[in-house]
Amino acid sequence: MHWHAYQWVGAGVGRGDEAVRRPLSPDFATSVLSPRRTGDWRAGSGSRVAATFEEVWLAVVWLAGAYSKIREELPLPGVLLEERLEAALDLLPRGVDVRWGEWLPGGRFVTIGVACCPNRYVPHPCPMRGPSHERAAAVLTLTARSTWEVGP
Image 1: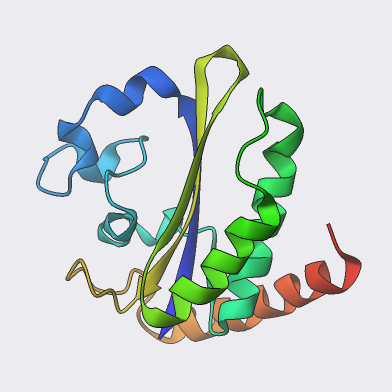
Image 2: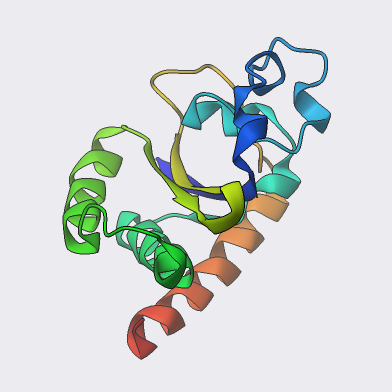
């Protein structure tokens, strides 16, 4: 198993357009919105993959880094990051996707997620199949490891 990371920031009002957020929609592939289900990110273009990880702890480090970039913008304190990371470390190795969503000022919404691949809930193929996947995973592993050493 490996993990694909995704992030979306946009107008929160757009999330109400349920039809284009589902893979069966003809507009799904070109939609800028995040999908309804985390695993459905895998049905879109591989270009939407923010990172791919072969080790679960690296995916969790990515989640922490992505969250730290928006933490100051959160209007209210939410679930503690430490609790989120504990849950991610428990869920991801068991094949359960992790997705965090938060409202930001100005009506914006951010989605930070990691989808398991293969995925137990959706049958989509890996968006990063082939030799380029292995090369991308190695580069991102090194990048994530550097982030881990430096800290948030």
